[in-house]
Length: 96
Image (tube, rainbow, N blue to C red; front, side, top):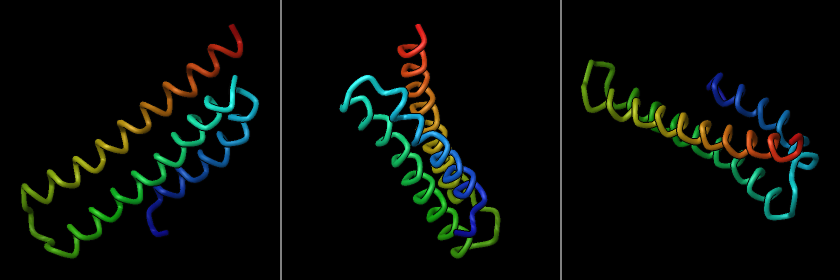
């Protein structure tokens, strides 16, 4: 993968995945934590695909291309926020 963001998020997944086994309070909770990590990788792959297609289509400034790239980045931010909520709740539940 050529995208540094994907490599960074893959590193984050390798850090957080083992902690999910320690932090989860049930099997369903563990599955939710693992699913949030997979959702992050999936969303980043889709975002990278959107950016690659947009760059291949045109190098000129096009507001629609810019919007598509912004929406792809925003989707990654939403999933990162969801991931933070899921793991934050697990930390709170485990240590409170």
